[in-house]
Image (cartoon, rainbow, N blue to C red):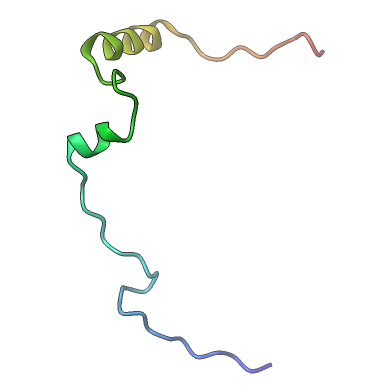
Length: 61
């Protein structure tokens, strides 16, 4: 078999391109209207802090 020659893309060896950070308003526009409200974020944070590790279900044993 004949090997193909490497073609340089000019974007680095793995072809990745540097990403720029999005502004906070751009990120918020991609989600629900109230998702980032203080009350919602506080509730999610408190619920997460109270949660524990997942427990394996024994119903199928």
